[in-house]
Image (tube, rainbow, N blue to C red; front, side, top):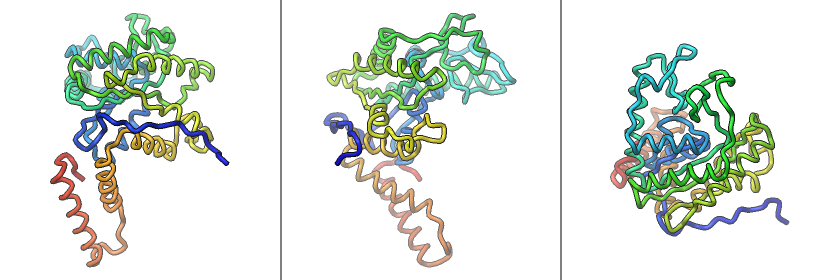
Length: 316
């Protein structure tokens, strides 16, 4: 008897991820979850230099700014609640000092450009089709920074607009990095503030849009994280207390699915060695001065050195 529906997963044959791969993640907070896994296992990865980007238009703007080497000036930032903000960046970049914020924005433009040019894999997670247009500047923003809602128009990107955003992202990235693999996924996190029906409508626009641009011949693919949560992990025990965000069990499960599809056999073997070291480093010794613990730590250091000799970027 089966108690769970399973999403069919096919092993990626070409362009698998290994420890020589360079991964760049953009998008919603689900990208941050996967990014934490990649960091834990010591892959070469970078996540969201401009912070969480929820919708495809914000991601397109981020990529466009990077490719075009945009320079941010004082006109691009504003003061609210004793902090300087930028509508094209998440509030984690906001700062009490205007000059520091502008410097950070311009630094991250260059960092994003370098990541787009050097990445072997770019993972883009789409969160919502709902966007907010700043009335004064007639511009869709990445983050409202708690500016009163009367200053914005709330709009739903059509499927055609989502497709246009994604096609622009692909074209811009491929212009700089023709061989890169682009992996799209839709975040399983529900944006219930928009409404239950509205959230489903939003996700449907994203899914419909993504599937119009997926093309394995161009190394543009789709990973079904949304479907895994909706169909395999549909029980609320896989959510955090807010009943909206996948909990750590769900994140671990999706990670295992992603690993099954994208990770090379050699990468999986190395991941096991990395995890052994990570667990060893987190182990609290009952008697740190004992000979047994000293031997354990010496063995752990040797394992670290062996990995570092194979992959110089792996540092614990």
